[in-house]
Amino acid sequence: MKSFYDVQQLLKAYGAIIYMGERLLDIEMMELEVSELYKAKIIEVDTYRDALLVLRAEREKEKKKRRE
Image (tube, one colour):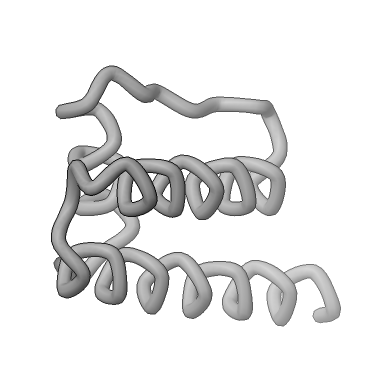
């Protein structure tokens, strides 16, 4: 898993399509959904870790973009 799109597709595969109208909120909600999938033992630890890394990097990019 290397991109934000990959994380979206992972969530979509489990029936979660997230759009809240604000990118930072979308990222936060996606983190919660990925965590819930992991807690329910639906996804493996590697998938969970990779998804969180992608989402955290995306959040930092978005925050940096807002500061500029």
